[in-house]
Length: 273
Length: 296
Image (cartoon, rainbow over all chains, first blue to last red; front, side, top):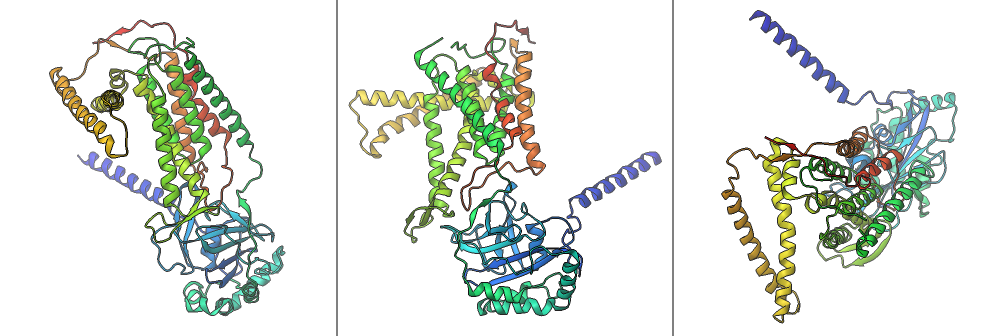
């Protein structure tokens, strides 16, 4: 009886340990993007353009080689909510308090279009969710609240949000420490420069964590961007790869199967046995 | 092209259980991805398999019409209800409930992809109705699912019976001088069809009861054995399903969303090979009869 009780205890302990291990494996790991001061030498820009034209920009530092669009957004301090769509990844439903409420995602009237800029180049419309986007040093992630129908136009260019596109580690560290000192005021300045509507919407106080030292809001850039409305159409969606050889394989396979089916149909009509 | 009779237990052809595994696997693949390329390949593979094994006297045209109708409805609903997308085709007045707003090419294409998935799934289960006999479908199910198998077989049988009745009643009414004039005139066909379907169902239930349905475990005179060809078909199909589900669980992208603008779907050659594996039964030609093992 005692042996049975001990065995049960061991089994229970093992089960608890396994459950704890499973839960630990399910829990999100330590974020790649640190919110600590000077934690990373890599930087990526974030540009958010609201439906009323107001613009919010952030420069986020991170310490790893790559970062996902979702991690960048999380570290920027800009409040957002999303919905996962299978392997597409996370779609942004509400960003920086716009829309304040929503019933469907993406919205029936407007939605948040996601753009990517690689190495300071022009915006490209992303065909993947922000959790599937991979960004490196010098890249930028952009959002614009656009009408559901029609060609989505790109947000303001990310140039200047993080200063020079390619920065050395030393320069980046220096900038990061500078932003440490000015993060609180810079975040507020961004919202103010972006326009009164953004401030009225409470975007900056609600979303910009004043204690986040990795945020270096580029107030000047934001103001400049807001004064020059971006109407340039984005380039083709960024699928993350170039020519897909798999498409050729699929075309050959599909053509073969379709040809065989047609032959069988024709033979069936002729009554060939 | 030779077409053998539907394989009954022990008759030349694939074993019912191999057909069942193939159908379940093909449906799994078709519904596990939104990628139109994979869905199209599954539909083509299933169509080839169906055409290879279709017994004489059975036609695929009614099935084709149903597929076209279902796919068209899916595309139309998505076009009218989804208003997202960069390429606007037309605009409906905004005060129209649900359908009011922009009609976009992206919504139309995504609706077509939904319809393609539906068509692929229907083609995958079509052999259970068009190739196998109802008792083969029952035999194909695992023991614990025997009653489910009977329900599935009965349902599949009723669908084709419904189609036959519709044709017969329509022909009979035309001979009496009936002509379709608007929706109301179809009452003269639909009402007899529904009444006949109810009558057939009652008769089927009485027949099953008279034959002792539910009195005990079903027995069979001859039991089909899985041959090498059956195992190959079942294994390749199951492998394709495991490949798709496994890659999905592993986070490898197998989906495609055309919003906000259309772009070419990403293709993984390994998954293309998985789709092609589903076409294996179209290469497994009917062979000579195999002696059946005596059952209990």
